[in-house]
Image 1 (tube, rainbow, N blue to C red):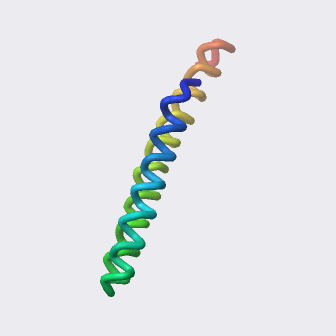
Image 2 (tube, rainbow, N blue to C red):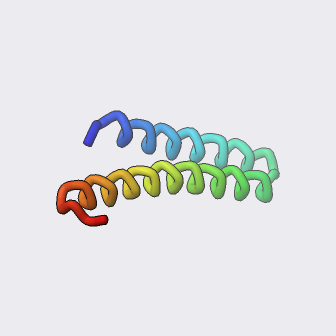
Length: 65
C-alpha cells in the first residue's frame, strides 16, 4: 500500500475541516454541512476503490472465478 493514499485522505480531511470552519464562521452552516458530506463521499469512493482492488487481488491469488 502506498503512503500517498494516506496523505491524500488526510489532505481531503484537512481541507474539508478548514472550509467547514470558514463557512460556519460566515454563518453558512448548511453549506458547511454539504462540504463535509462531500468530503466524506470523496474519501469513501477512494476507499471503496481500494477495497475492490483488494478483493480482485484475493480472487486472483486463490484462482476463484
